[in-house]
Image 1 (tube, rainbow, N blue to C red):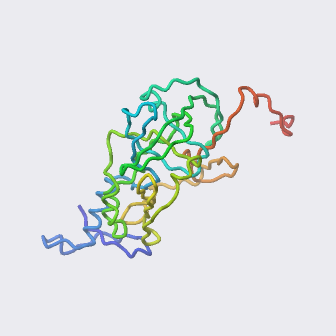
Image 2 (cartoon, one colour):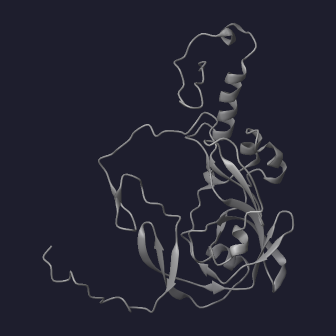
Length: 271
């Protein structure tokens, strides 16, 4: 509806609406075209911030005629690989649930889930990696807005050469897998594309190309309201105005009720 003039990349500020040649039916300037591209990438929302999420197929060595296409989070902050129960049910995995402790930025919770081995992931170009023992967890983040797509790469000059290697958004595939540090091969960086400091970058992993960073062409999207009165307590005990991340996991084995009556030096202090 309005014509906006883009400020310099250093200040990241848009000027007030003002009249221009396009108001009178003349050809649009390249700066207005950038605004259109930004709308296409961000889909009219608050912006798209891409994460290390890759589209792949998951198979089982004993059921090679079956496969499921899924998105996988490549998360070096997690010490174990996790899988949603949907995949285990799809392949008919029957195993006894075992209890484990799941630590995230939001705290520590007791979980129970099946453990399964024999799974293999296959990239879209046919590269295979054997997965370690997977732990069932239905708390894997399912933020589809963080999935990198070819539309993002097409709108950046330094990412244009990899457009063909990043698939469009698959509406049928879900984020059912999280690959942690127990499969280090999945984290190896084979190549990368880096632009300007404020632009997203791309990395080629063994399972495919990924894009990381804020993809808005007009600079970072800033929240409309900043509430500095509310603070959060992070997992390390520090307070912050930033909401804790729920994507960082730490898994450890524990026996049931082992820590139920754990004593501390502060037990007898009055509230």
